[in-house]
Length: 292
Image (tube, rainbow, N blue to C red; front, side):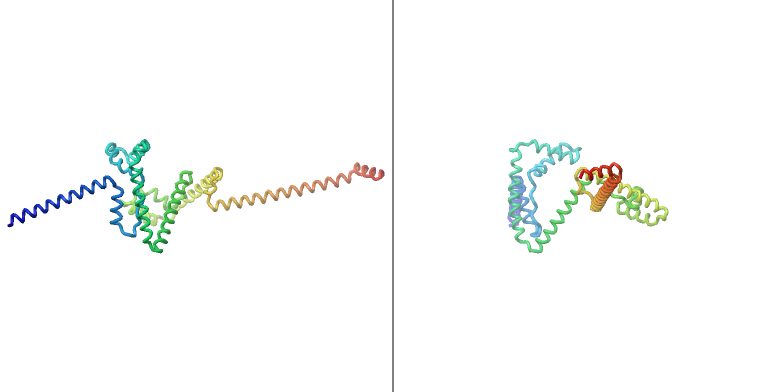
C-alpha cells in the first residue's frame, strides 16, 4: 500500500509541475505578443486604487526599450548617450510598415489607459481632486522654472555673485577633512567659524569684487536683451530704473525745448524793439504817415 501511495504522490507532483510549466509558458507567450497590455493588467491588479494609471510609452520609446539590449551587446564600450543616438537613427530610417506594430501596440495601451483613467477619476473624492490639481500646478510651475533657467543659461546670463563662505569653500574643498560631501561641508563650516577677522576680510573683499563683476555683467547683458527684443527677461528693478530714466530724459528734453522756445521768443521781441528804435525804421514810419 505504501509504494502505491508513494507512486501516486510522485505522479501528482509531476502533474502539478507540468501544469505550472504550461501556465508559465502560456504567460510568456502572452507577454511576448502583447507586452504592454499584459503589464498594464498586472499593474491594475496589484496597484492601490489611490495611484493613478501611468501613461503608456509611445511607439518610439517601445522601440528603444526593445533595441537597447541588442545595440548595447553590439557596442559594449559605447556610452549610453551614443547608444540612444544610434537607436534614434535606426528609428528614423524605419519604414511606416516597420513602425506599424509599435504604433498599434501604443494605440491599444492608450485606449486602455483612457478607460483606466476614467474609472480612477470617478472614484476620487473632491478633496483628492483638489489635491491633484494643486500638485499638477506645482509640477507645471517647476517645469516652467526649469525651462526658464535653461533658456537664461543658453542666453549667457551672468552667474550670481558668491558669498565669502562660498569662495572659501571652493578654495579649500579638495583638502577638506572627511570622505563624503556632507563631512567636507561640516569641516569647512567649522574652519570658517574659526577664522580670524582679518582672514575673513580677504574673502569678504573678494565677494564685494564679485558683486561689482555681477552688476557690470548684468547691465551689459540686459542691454543686449533689450537690443534683441527680449525685454521680458530683464529684472523688474532694472525695468523700473529704465522707466524712471526714460521719464527723466523726457522731462529734461521738454524743459530744454521750452527753454529754447522762451529764448527764441525773447530774441524776436528784442529784434522788434531794435528795429522800431532804429533811424531807418523811424523814417519809414514817417513816410507812411505822410502818405496817409
